[in-house]
Amino acid sequence: MNWKNEQKQSGMRQYLKVSIFFPILVLVLYSILFLVMPDKAWPALKNSVSILQSLLIPLCLVFGLIFLINLFLNPAKVAKYLGRTSGLKGAVLSAIAGVISVGPIYAWYPLLKDIKEKGAADSSIAIFLNNRAVKPFLLPIMIAYFGLLFVIVLTVLMIVASFAIGYVLSIFMGIDKPKCAD
Amino acid sequence: MKIAISSAGSTLSSNVARQLGTAEYMMIIDLDTGDVEAVSNPGKGQQRGAGIQAVMLAISNGADTVLTGYCNPAISRQFETGGIEIVTGISGTVAETIQNFKDILPKETDANLDRSAGEAPKTDKKKYINAARSALRQLINILPVMFSIVLLIGLFNTLISKKILAGIFSGNPLIDNFLGACFGSIFTTNPINSYIIGGELLKHGVSLVAVTSFVIAWVTVGLIQLPAEMTALGRRFAVLRNFLSFLSAIIVAFLTVSVLNLTGIVS
Image (cartoon, rainbow over all chains, first blue to last red; front, top):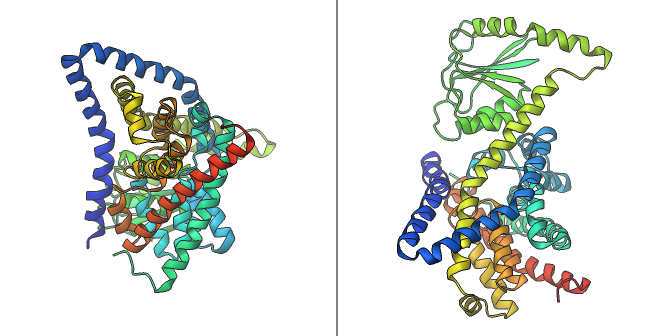
């Protein structure tokens, strides 16, 4: 199976679908609503605007945090070491790379495939992917909605769970030798 | 300072390759020592994924700047995130490119040499600008889908009553938890969207455990992305990882709410 074509079809197309077609779909939906039920459309729009207003300050903080991460950390550089390290060090590095990684997931698949072929453990890749759920620069938004304590508890548990998933996955993958991706 | 130039051949007289990802070679030039190395480009002849490999090649060779004919914006961003400056629109031979680059460089090199006194390097300002520019771009990338989600929620808040929602999320923690994880498993987009949706669901009286499993599954499980993950990392790996992540979303949601209950924050 041709990886490039497959990747193009599934990863990129899905991303485009979400980032282009989704907003268009929503706009079409609103247009229809304005024509059919204008009395419902206005409150819906007003409600959306008030949600956006409440997101304004957290979003500014998000910008500041992304700026700092860009300045001091380099996800690609950290990810590069995943192929060379193993054990606890590898797991911690994978977690850090996952946490600081940005951008749509499809952009990371080629790099992950590459470092996997270079010898990165399955557990490292799984830990990387699961820690993408922990995003320090989005904490302001999360705190605004759920409160600080919830965010701390959830973040800690998610990181612990990612290690558990990496561990269990490596056991299952080791039962018989995994086939190569292609 | 090291620069990398995409090249059609392995000598200094070779032409600069127009496409970065698919170039035959990457010439790595150390401007301080004058060392030149021709590194075969692993992405040559490929279409997708070649750009990412070029980024990796430049990073692993310690390049500060990459010069090429053309590089697509998504890959440029990867370079910027990696702290590497990318200069496009370059043509001519590799030797000419090095000379031209050196001609515009002296001021900056002198500044670097004067740095021994311990002053802040001049390039720091550039680093800040690049980081800010890249942050702005990352934020802008998030916005279209985020705005759409907010608009949908506005619609949802107006059209869907609490009664309908209560019909789906019955209040049974086990079922709610499972349903939350199911809804979160469909897509994988930026987590910011799951926070907004989750937060609004909470306001509508949906239980915290359902919202939590939804938020976790949103990023860690992706049915729509599954084919891409399978081709990149293997069918078995992708299916297992998604399945384990789904289970983990349910368990972590349950534990999170239990911990919060213990602290008395959530009644």
